[in-house]
Amino acid sequence: MSGTADHPLLGDALGILDDLVAFPSVALTPNVDLIGWVVDRLDGVASDVRLSHDPTGTKANLFATIGPAVDGGIMLAGHSDVVPVDPGDWTTPPFEADHCDGRVYGRGTADMKGFVACVLAHAPRWAALDLERPIHVALTYDEEDGFHGAPVLIESLSDAPRPAAAIVGEPTGLQVIGAHKGCYEYTTTVTGMDGHSSRPAEAVSAVHHATRWIGELLGLAGDLAERAPAGSRFKPAHTTTNVGTIAGGMARCTVAPGCSFEWEMRPVQGSDAGFVKTRMAEVEERLLAEMRTVHPGAGFVTEVVCEIDGLEWDEDSPAIALMRSLLGGDPEVGVVAYGTEAGLYQTAGIPSVVWGPGDIGVAHRPDEYVEVADLAACLSILGRLPGHLAAG
Image (tube, rainbow, N blue to C red; front, top):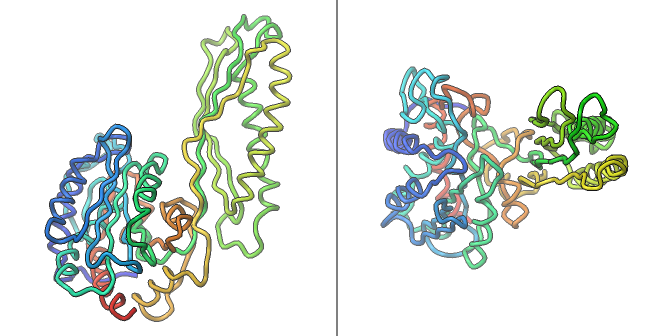
């Protein structure tokens, strides 16, 4: 969906986006300044604001309610963090919004501060209405590096009004996304024993055994393809695995005593995650039996970075029904392979959909941008929310 770059609130949204981009809220760094700025902006607008923090107190989630504190409202969800940047790769400073040729350039403009700016631009108007049910604004920390904030936010909402649906404003080009794969990420560390490379049988190469483990993981591709659910709408249709980084060893002439690698799988169904874990546990047991005949202290240790369930397809989802009502007609509802917080909200009992301005193809890249026309179209659709709430 696209629109002309015109809306009564467009100037407000662009100004808010400028301010949001100026916060260098890179994942795994403090975000309390940004959240504090949003809290100040919602002063006198939100009827309730709840903050939840990480153990250090330097990162915060926000859950703000506009309207009555009752169940059945709509949650507009985003994350406050962005991915890191190398300023040398950018044409303009990444944390200074640059307006050029109908676009706004800057880190986070597409993913996903553009959506947040549209929501905050509407907030004062929504607050001035006599809403029958609330509109909630949710912002999380550290989505870009392990989805750390959303579980904390969800836990903090045990006594909060329960939303009837959530719109997660990731950059979908304003296409409705009704399902996405899960995102399971890990770091595995292999412990071996060093020795002279001329006598490898008297040592245990962590690099060698790590590569054998990785080969077995990637070798599951055929089995996973056969497990693809009938009628899967994903491309590819099945669960995938990937090893992104590997590091280890000391020198060419030394048997490597240690090695670590980062890997992931993107399940299309929960049972696939169990299948991969079971098969790799069998591989690990076999490798360890070999390794420990030489060095009893050899081992594999896998750290869970995140295990985020996918957004499961539900044709009867109230969130999809909401978007169809807002957009009118019979808009196409798609699926994507990347992960979002929508799966977490769905698992917590909040039906969810992914929809927002911007192109995922420019997210995480130098010179990230959002089209001004996308922001105008987003503002137009969000402006229909109060009527939907009043209509029940």
